[in-house]
Length: 234
Image (tube, rainbow, N blue to C red; front, side):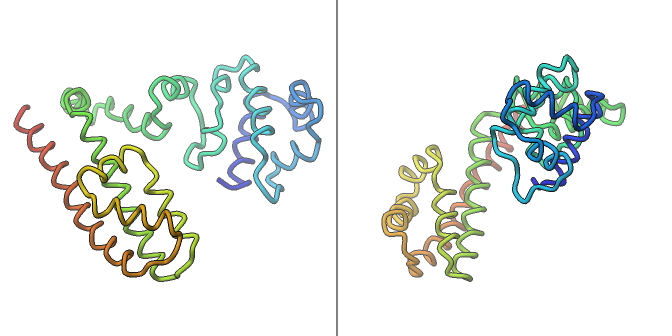
């Protein structure tokens, strides 16, 4: 997210509300009398050097939620901070709050109701109903493993500690660590060493990079097996 993207969305909100910038400022001051004119106007005009604070965004959201406008009543931090969302529909926002899918995913699913996809709608429904939950678990672990492998590459190329912090952050997933501790003890032990020492241990990083490829193959195999069983059960 950048200030120009936020500015675009705030101008969209003003258009939906049918108010000027000054009128929007007054609406904001109803919820936060101390909010300043430059804070609001700079956000609308995209002139901030940094993004507004969560407190400021919260005021914008309250103005929308109490406006009586169906399109705006479900405006959220996700809408204001997500670069991919340009417009918002009340129905999409409600669906998002219920099941947690992004605006882009909801729009993609709606496309499957298009006549072009008409013949596929039954099998699409079948897929979401019958694909086991482990599929999504292993897919997320494969994504984490791929990101870890890429971060190791960045760390080895630059020797910058910020990539070590990013590496440890990627590992910091309870389900992922529990799986590694049981099934890939060698990976888990290298992670613990890096976490406890916060040093660029090139030998262990090289070993970890090798193990990430094995881990990717492992999760890829599990996903292929789930797909194979799914296909056979159709």
